Image (cartoon, rainbow, N blue to C red; front, side, top):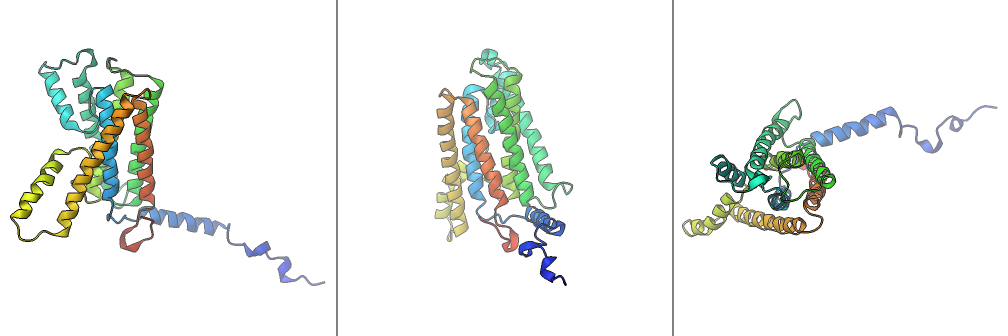
Length: 281
């Protein structure tokens, strides 16, 4: 009796679905997706969220550790006072903590910029993979700091030790990644670490508008971004203050930042690409 062709064919016709070539196709599409540059339109929304993270972390850190982890202007003042012998913070050694934060932030600025701009890592600074990996690394640093703070309970009066120095350095290191990202996506004014220049630009714009004939829509959008930066940072500070004075304390602020950093990292994966490439945002 002759065999029919159906007897030797795979069930339901799924012969190629699980083939090696199919798996290679999925991997190739994923690689192409990660290598695609993102469309920077509306990326300012994620940078404004970074302001909230900055406010959250800085307010908690300066309350518990006595130094900032993002805004290095304040740390420079603390450092100068300490070197000049005017630091009256006693055994907390605020100026040394500030020095650790400044050094870590500077190192992070160099390495995050190298990550984005070195052709050895990524073809383009705006690649989805580069932005995702940057915020994944930032999230990992904050998570490591949060783990140390959770295991090693800390108080405002604790002297400087590894359980303060290490998480302080990790959080300051990762905060530079936000500032570098603002340059990468083309919103250089939204560094998430300073407000002085934003206050100046925000309040000087009405005076400039009165002395010029035309005011473009792009300028108005910049004003909304600056106002959003102030409000986002202030909201983060309020949240950080609530965490700092609660029983949860600094670790609550750090774990909240971990969640927010992870959300931003995930957002870059689905962000719309250049040239109409598919994306969600």
